[in-house]
Length: 180
Image 1 (cartoon, rainbow, N blue to C red):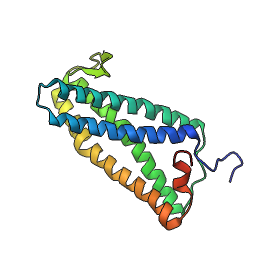
Image 2: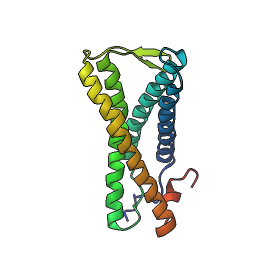
Image 3: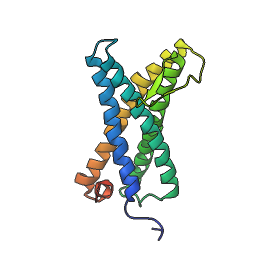
């Protein structure tokens, strides 16, 4: 182990991890809750606006997290080499999907020519020509591919953390828990 390699995650890395996880649940909840309202109902539009706003927030936080991760080394990985490699693959794919989801949602709105209102504070200007076919293709990826891929990857991530906790009985999970 290098003397510079930490044994624990730093508080900013932990905070970003858990904040993004919480926001992802909120993004999902907002889009699910909009379904309880009829088309044209202002509450339906409010929940959709919240979904888009939270998604863009996740994108910004993920960019910050990637930057932070490049400037602050991760702790020494624990577990067998196959676990470390699988963990790296799953983490990399989670990063790609969590960045790709809001980019996809943003692209759908842009190509559909629909406004993107951010927390009711401002509207993102139309940056692309309208292309409904492209919007539909990206929406399919956003809702039917990336969403289920994200669920599977998060499932693997949680299963790995639980494996380390209850089978390997090492400190992998403890190192990422808040205050741990």
